[in-house]
Length: 234
Image (tube, rainbow, N blue to C red; front, side, top):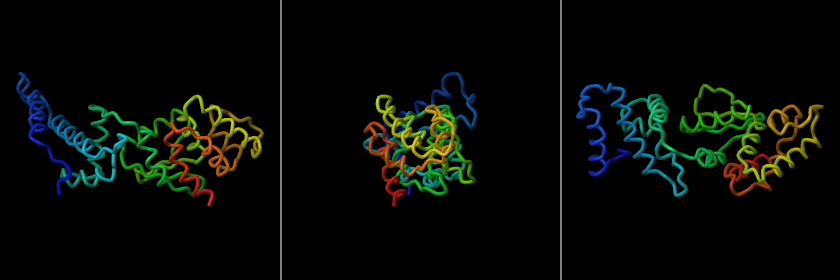
């Protein structure tokens, strides 16, 4: 079964793009790797276009590394490498927050850590970069698809994505719980919420339950977190 097929108009457009690399006094100047990446770019753009949800997010189940590898006859690892390289050379715009939000409901909570399977490497790198910019970190895993972070840093990420107008209210609620429960002499640091919560050994279930009630509709990740909060409270 082929997961991607092109109509005649798309094939004509692709040939015109390929022709630019051969018929403008530049025949043979493109390397094999260049041509392969160009063909992969045609393919992945078509797959994404065919498998977009109404909100613009991708249905990763329909365009998994496995299905692409079956279509192209290459390993899943090579598919992931091509995805990363293509995103660098031919960036495809996407809202990683929305994509991430759809995965949060499938998260697991174990040993004070949130574990989420991230099916796409570019989505994983976007999340990782955002976390690192906030001073947080992820736990490296042998399974490169697994995102594993302390739940405190996860809360930090959620707060960072909250619209500025409502962020103060969310932080105020977190600070209130910190003041009531903290076992640390250190003051609460709004610029390093995750570390403050770790240092204070604050009850995370209480914080998650409290902030989920004041979440703004714009924060799609916090909205998705409500399912996880319910599991934690049980």
